[in-house]
Image (cartoon, rainbow, N blue to C red; front, top):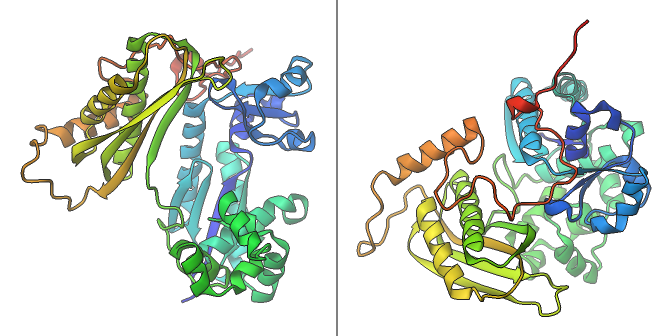
Amino acid sequence: MNKIFGLIDCHSCYVSCERIFNPKLIGKPVVVLSNNDGAVVARSDEVKKLGVKMGTPFFQIKPLVDKGQIIACSSNYALYQDISNRVVKVIRSLVPAYEVYSIDESFIDLTGINESELESLCREIKHQIYRNVGMPVGVGVGRTKTLAKLNNWASKQWKAKTGSVVVILDEDRQNKLLAYADVGEVWGCGSRTTKRLECMNVTKAIHLAAYDKKILRQSFNVNIERTARELTGQVCFGLEEGPDPKQNIASTRMFGKRVYDLLELRQAVASYAARAAVKLRKEGQLTGCVQVFIQTSRFDDNPFSNATIVGLESHTDDTREIIAAAQAGLTRIYRPGYPYAKAGILLSQFTPKTGYVGDLFAKPKRKNSDELMKLMDKVNTLQGRGTLRFAIEPNEASWGMKRQYLSQSYTTKWSDLLKVAIG
């Protein structure tokens, strides 16, 4: 049976989340800012028409915000994740199999559904998500995951004509889109890969599909070869598979103020290490290496940065071990007197947790480590991040992010629930 995949993508996800609870933002030029209100990470269609690019530093558009020509929102990740979970709940009720790819994207498997009914089903999915959650989405359907993602891109390119739903199963129609789409629009082709492909005269998606697969494997890697095969309709990635397996996990933040004190740096590094450990457990991985870095602003008169790698005696996903390694690394690289602007943690050297056998001569694993970590993750998922935390992690950090334009946590805090006056 020929496989059929779909990709459901939330339109300007962060902006749309803000609009759900603040309808006054609908039709207005809205941007969502990164941590510390540093740069643009989401744009409404109205802002895109103004020429504001993704990643634009906030100070460059602040005059427009002050004049009311653009509305800025600080990132409210707890709200965005909750809305994403609601979208997935609707998807789960309507399709036999799905994969949550990111906070705003989910793949679905539509194999076995009558091809003549696919478009009407996708429009019903789109309608139900908007009706139940208020989130506008686009749907792309194709013979492979890579083609589904490209067809989803087409649904956004010609939104008025397609109604944000593009179903392409015919080879001739698909090839027309491949001939139109730049290779940089193909799933898995990042900016560096795209530049290298362009040097090989591979500028359109159809060029990549037609390129010699052995040369692609030799010049890049097996994932680029598989991506090219997927563009021809050959299924290489099933659900829960993709061209970008995680090789590391990072947790970094700019501080809301300059930090001089070592204790505050220790608090920050511990908090970032704890967040990275949670991500690690969700991936079902163990880490063998912790990298720590600290840096001042590059605009300072005497900029300074330092980093170190701490190898772990045994691979682990225990937050306590990761925090301890991070603190040892920080002690090694800290230099007093500098106004630190950023710190971060990078976990690497992963191995799957399932089936892992530790070193016989290494320090024994802490007793009940898995049970404790599962309990903490469960409580923090149900009650909110930070409900259970380690003593070195502050409740309210003095170095926390700037969030001048933060909206209410409409769905994750009782105090922020909308109040409706009746009568």
